[in-house]
Image (cartoon, rainbow, N blue to C red):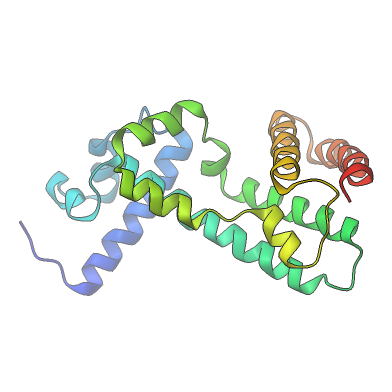
Length: 193
């Protein structure tokens, strides 16, 4: 088995992340094989296993990195919008989050089947590490001074449901999506803030 320099390892890691994201976004976790990944990255299959225990681990690593980027952006939005009303801030968070999700389609492609496949193949410890990272946008908003009328779990479910509505609008023109979500958000804001 070849030995890689630190620079070589970093290059291969980056290629695995980029090609994995491209393949998973295009074909989904179930249809992508390790052979597809190593062919795209131009490494031996044995070399793949020096980086990941399986394709599910690579998928989880990609998703976790993208989520971290989104959450860092949301933190910045919340910090920079302190002078705005709570309703304005919540709307900003939702629209920034939806734009970032559009930027990272691998995250919008995660469905129940993908979650089940990952849970079956990934170690309990790795899943626990992933869940520990779990950024909760509602908790972050509360930490930045936004006060909701309902319990955090309820508000999180409201936003999750709104997010599902946003997903269902993906075939529509962007301006239509924005108008529909804007109307829904205005109604929700009346109830939860």
